Length: 298
Image (cartoon, rainbow, N blue to C red; front, side, top):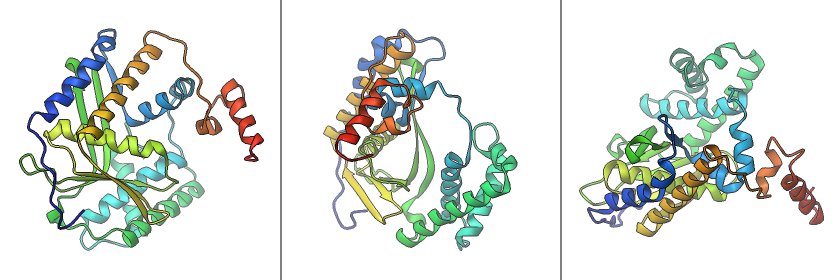
């Protein structure tokens, strides 16, 4: 939280300038969208910037809930409850409560239906994983005071070009509140895996959405790696915000060209090849595998 340090103040026109930059950049492709427009999330930007072929392949696979993607939702819900319920119950009880709430409330968009129908063994393994995440959060993170105004699983959105393009995100944790033009919010994204270059871009995406929402940026964004008890943070300034805006514009242009104009996607061999659905047939994935073999990373 950078306790004791002065917080930066930003000019009053910053959010308006940021919005104009975004809208000017996407206006040309937005005009080619249908009535439903385009919704863009951090995962869309990460995929399309990593490899266009990978993005199209993944977007063509129907979404289905399973243990791997449901366990993170359960863990985050349990962390949310750990802050809301005082005194906070033990981690295992928080996970049980999280599963109950998701089953009761979240059948349309969340994993509620899957949680209610999944085999007992899968649910048991999911509970174990989620409880481990909650334990680590409680071990590593200080108790969240209500005076910090904690917001958990907080949805953010920015509507551009009269609703043709919508940017959406959900922040794991936000603390603080802007005061006038003074930035006093910190955004934290909890991670259970290894650090990735895309994590920085995800945080900057959130910073742009928060700036457009309230008119003032967060003063700091951070990834908290629960497995290692380690974090990476970046203090937000105008250069960070406009660099993020240019990346968003480039990503939206690529998405429209690929999905609406049907432009042929480019192949960019890289780590994503290892889990891409096309890894057995894509020339880029084969080239990436050969490159890894040459340096002994089989």
